Length: 156
View 1: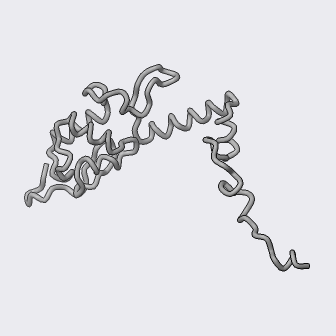
View 2: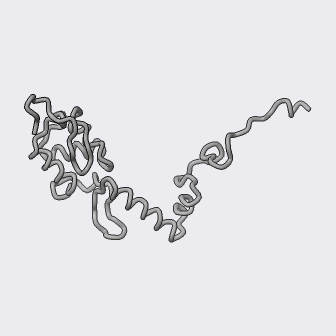
């Protein structure tokens, strides 16, 4: 609920995350880890909240509805292609993970790849690029800076 002056709140709390009350709701929701621009817009539409409205001017009922939609997006008709964990390999369900759950599941996936000795798991373990990038000029953690050819030594 807005304060007596009508300016609103400076901080709005949704899904255990403090959001800037001076930003538009659609933009402020992207501060939650696991919520992007498209998903934030879909959440606002499902909760029947204007995306351009300042987050600090939201009423308690609107904040509750946003919270519910962020927690259970499938229940409110958000399509499965917008979720960030579709067809989970262990549970077989479609989910949308947020904040610490996202970090936990990502870490477990990497540990699983390492345990089964998958190529991606071995690349993660060696702290090398996983997706096929070149390593001659980049990813030089242990090699130091690339040394240039010293012209004085060549001349001798």
